[in-house]
Length: 382
Image (cartoon, rainbow, N blue to C red; front, side, top):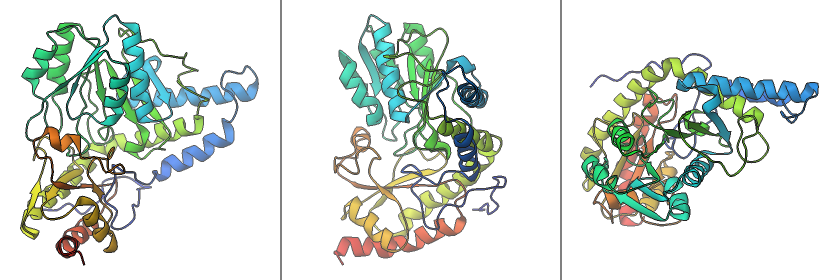
């Protein structure tokens, strides 16, 4: 297999710490985003709703960030809203969509993240979870059957951030449109990693996924969609006082990545293909999960027998390798992964590797070199 060693990202390219392979858990803010944040913080510190000079200047910076995000996503500025996080965007979207309609039943895939499932359970009259295949892909026939009964909303993630499998959002959107049900797509870990999905009524995302600040979420609502937020958006920001510097940093990070996103995705796809191919050869009891081809370019999850995921993560950390155990939403709570359970592989210890922007071949090689010894130590308890 040929490995691409040249980083296609333009200067100033990110420099993730050596050994760091947990992009889903967070990654360094891009240098261009840090610069944008500092510039905006120095200029746009006033309330953008004020009519004085400082307020108008702050409003212009916020408007520019909104227009930039819209251009990157291929939508209208008026349809873009900022929030304080990705999960906040999802919650605001679900509540607002249900409040604007007459039906409160929600249909969702069984591998949605807790960012979707928690607010859905809170505000829906009924939540129907649609099964997935053994690789984690939505059963589109079962989704069609679920849509045969009245519903106020359907939720299908663009891709599963735990195992990397992409979802058939185009087919799901066509079915939802035919049934008159709005489709919410949670684009976690997708934007900035290639083409932006376009088959949706409402799109939710987090700026931290593309190297922006963690405290900025994106919510995009198509013009024809009925949506009633709990509070009026303040010049495109929903919920609390606008973080204008954060919005500017988020927009700048996405502008920086978009031109080279496809090239970086191909490079990282090759790296994760290498990981997927070599993992089963390194030790017994390793099984790679998720779709081998129709997947995110930077995520690999594998299960191990005879060890807990947490212990293996700690052993790898002793070797200078940072990875994650289980779901990003459940690893701290010791809850089993509902994603693996839905895929029919519950009970296995899982480890997720996710490549940050600018990751090097050397870091991937160091992980593959360290894994056998770390796994042996974890299994033996030494």
